Image (cartoon, rainbow, N blue to C red):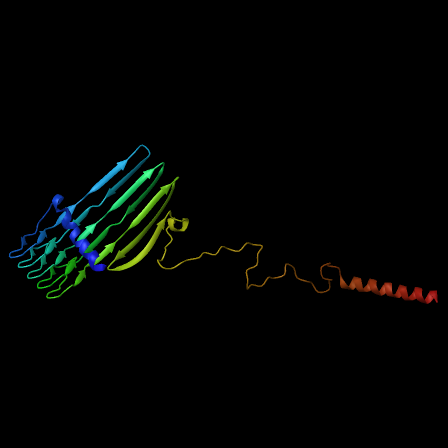
Length: 264
């Protein structure tokens, strides 16, 4: 499956050479059969359609770079696009230097809109060499497969697809970035107040902010101090003097004992 995808990515630029421009490389296919060679190429196909209520547009600008000459001497079925490709004495070699494409789709209607953009690039430095190979596929730059059979080589791949939509004044978007054959997702939408204020956000970590406790609530793990303190010599919760209460009690006790004795 990967081999078929690489072949498709390499042959696709050759299929639009009829509208291409900016060819700079010198091509050499002496003694070869069925060879296709093209220098640095750029195309920008687009299409639009619309009505009174909706519209849609599609574009796919693509370019193939590379410097140097393409050489496929004494080869059979070689395909070379860009520059700096060498496939002498090879069979079925497919070589493409750095490729970049930015297909996009946009649609709107009834106050709503949506868009998708998926820029993709395959880079690399240096030239591709598949001399004496059979069925070699090289995409990007700096690939070497001399004397091999059925090899597939891919340069540095970068992809930054992004999608966005708006509806009734609200906006949302998401983006996924991939570079150096590694993927690191990142999501975006309308900024939160913390983000808009410039608060730093570390990718891969989540931060939870805890609201301050209400004055009437007690935080778990803390001790509450009593609202008031008792004073020695006073009854709690009343503030009456202990001495006065004791004297009154003694008087009442004496009176009670006297009345009891009188009653006998």
